[in-house]
Image (cartoon, rainbow, N blue to C red):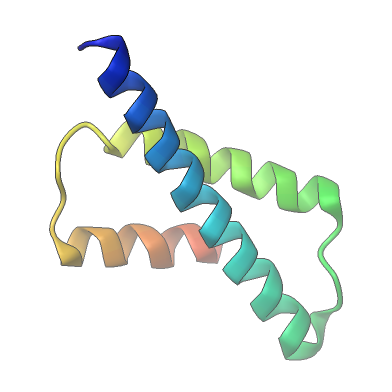
Length: 76
């Protein structure tokens, strides 16, 4: 794998993890659960980042992306 594709893979994983974390934390706050502590948010985003990087080896269909997104948000 070239270094350019590794960088793009990491960038996609970072964006995915950040969006999942923001949506989850926002939903938690809007549902009346209060603000998510930064340490908890960071741990969730890093976990999502690791998982996203692992599954980002090839193009996935909409169903796989939806399952990954919902699963990640449930973990965070």
